[in-house]
Length: 302
Image (cartoon, rainbow, N blue to C red; front, side, top):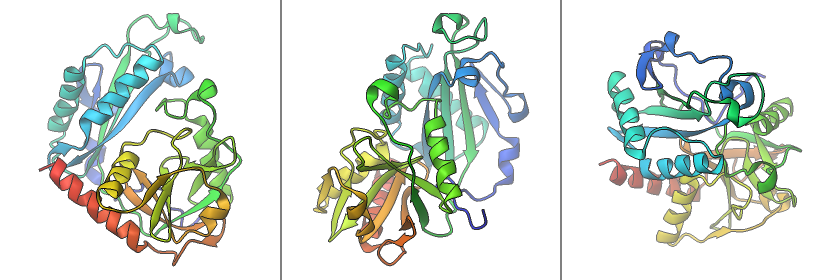
């Protein structure tokens, strides 16, 4: 599709062809960062991951990201094989190996490791986890507000696949993304199983109505770190903010809408299902939140 924009769209950077990648305790050239076809992540999507962003020499909110990583690993009964200090050191070492100081994005991935046979049972993963860190020079380059399309794929119940789990099993979100693109949009707006607006396939979702910020209850979406920072900033800055159930009717009538995520921070939304949201550009409340968030990053990474 022409004029397609993704929420993780970055400027081209030739340095990324020569990056070095952390793989099971070694830092190797990009071409050598390979895993077995028997790896649990490749074979079954059996693993968890985190995305982190580097600002002025500091990985923003690293403690929160490590909390979420270790909580997810515990939930799927996966021993990372490293303690928090070792994971932190692996990130810092990979950063140093790539001589990165700012505008970098890290994807930290842990799978259950190489299986002895190509079947599902976790006990077939006997050689320990696979741990890798892909770190790229990455400056967001989103040329216009995002277009969303509502899709039939839902964020479901915790007993099916808990949407709070940042797992390698992303097929539900990928199918949602494909459906949105087929509908002429950039990203998918996903509902929860009750039909309330929930999240997009890759980011958390907010609307603004009459100066108040709304987002979902959080029951069926990723427990986004940027999402929580935005909620906290609103509360600290006397911007009314509500975690609530709301419908597409409320959404279509919003004055503004935006997405949150580690990569893009706050990304404005132009339209949903062909309906323009507000002016179709970044709204005043979104601009204020973006400024507050930049100030928070400056303090965090000072």
